[in-house]
Length: 81
Image (cartoon, rainbow, N blue to C red; front, side, top):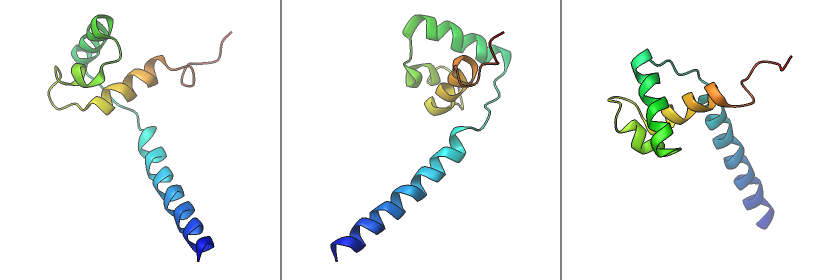
């Protein structure tokens, strides 16, 4: 009986991981005004995404953070030449 619980837990965790990873890499489009506000707010408050998102109507903290990571993350940067 103990083995079955482990298998079920493993199956549940792999399904939830797949769901997160597909959403995680969607490109977020922002207007120039939104981008400017995000840059200025980040300079003032740092990585406080919820605070920044509160200043941009219709945006969630997760969207703001994903946008920032896609713009500034090493994984998304082009090859270094």
